[in-house]
Length: 613
Ligand code: M6R
Image (cartoon, rainbow, N blue to C red):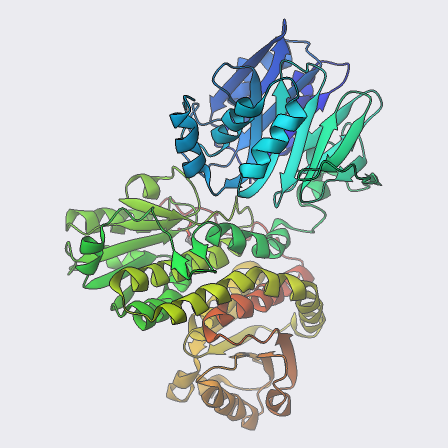
């Protein structure tokens, strides 16, 4: 989720780059950098932290009037947010610079090969591999060198390249990470997102996966990376204002982030699962197989939405790896007599990596000698620094206070962790493990295909329900925590009272609440507790309750008992259903909050990162 800007034209590039980067800061702000040419040589300046530091270094753009350059604002994925890891990255001789957004999955192998061939690496990033690989193939044709480099690269990239040997040319390429070009008069641009370009041009070309573009001030030529065949991509005129553009045209960051989930789930499992062989690769867990074999218990430690992700994972880990799991609210855990030791693996789960209670719990666990492996979205955050290892979620920056894409990315990371433990402890038949991996690999496509349709259904539902004051969310097994998460989403952004409950608990109290004024959102996946769940729905109905069922395609029985049904795609494997059932719950909360005129992205009394107790 980094930001990229490139400019070639007649005016000084630096102010354009800095301005564009400022408009992309929502994509990442760990560090920033720019590169340009001076007297035929590549110049570069980089700075840890927010863009303001870089702006001071380059004196607001006054230090050079060079009309070509590239810039980057970083959201760290490989390597801490330091100046050495900031983009642009360069080759051994400093002849070329590269900015990149995405994840190079085989960077480790490529880096080792390049090292053996004599290349020197100075950063911990995957991006630096691109600079050296281009250098390897560069004789006098930068485009050909980029093509040959990309033929060896696995993973996702949006990149920009500037070479001193072609001082009037920028090269851009993309695969699975966004990159747009801006067509100007006597100037052209590239950027990872439209807002960077709007003050300069509204004529935007959307590159497609596998496209490579060569930009000069008067031309844009696009071809396919693999074949070199020229392709036409028509420019579209963008009418959004700058604020709408930052949200890619969505009304709120939250909605944008809901729509980003196919990509963020994919980014989280990318390079970690091999569907063909059924193998899970998690080098981040720096524990040997012997150490893993000694683990007697796992404690998942988190707050809020992250705690809900932990509750789902308990089912997966216990089922597949056979290890007992406790899911602890960090604010409770830290004040108890703790029975943890070196045989108990503690896993703090946190989007921000800065949540005070989770951090405190982690520190206490370490004092007791427990190994700590975090699940976190923010590289270099305190929780990651204080853990023995971190499985990053790669969801990209989440700006809406209500967690959405971070949640499904946490589920992804935990699902992989559960399978990894099953693999190392040999507790699962390899064919069954391969089946779970294959099922996970399908999730992005399944969600993407039906997102719009689910959204439409949730919007219609919200018209009818936005004025209610209380909601009950019910689920069983894996979908009990999803019910909790659905209720939390609704209450935090719409200020409607909502409770999540395990449906089997209904008769022990909450059934007394059922009346015409409290809609019940019932999660009814086709799993081994389906019949039980339908019985609970019947119980609500017989007490004249209003039922909104979330149910799978083809489940006709549910329509006989529920007055409203939101359809989700049916899946064969029950393990992946929580990913899918989460989406309509996020959309229901979003649309109800919007209909009530609430500040969806910044709800009252809440902060994105709770760094105090
Ligand atoms: O950054 P963390 O994951 O540690 O944050 C934990 C909670 O504060 C967070 O999940 C909160 O509950 C969200 N606002 C829920 O949408």
